[in-house]
Length: 142
Image (cartoon, rainbow, N blue to C red; front, side, top):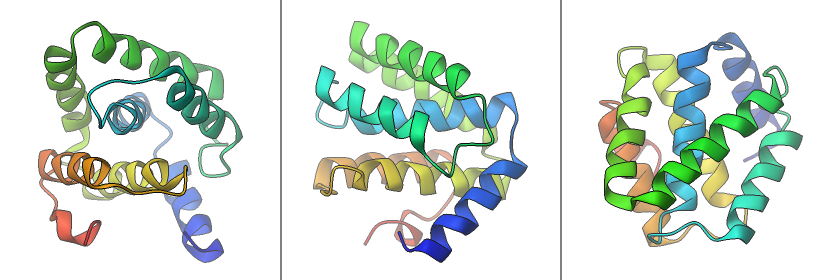
């Protein structure tokens, strides 16, 4: 993501500094981390590091975001299928808010790219998140 796109994302996300948006973004982060069916400690730590150092998320209470992220990771780790359904429901809370929904998917793409590799499983999760938010996945994933 270029500097201009990153600045736009930061400006967008700072306008949505509310609980539903924070929940949806952290649920999306957990789902991206679990794209291959599990969340290993390395992925979890890398994403947690991104959350705490991200310019895009600096307007949020990063401690609260980390707590939410950890809770959602635990939920999906305890029971992948049930956890995924629950996290998609959390993400769906912003489905009627177009700008917030787009920002959630944008963050999912940023997280998926944070390790330098945006693989097919991660792309599939981004598509699912976009569909859950009633957005066209083609706007985010080729």
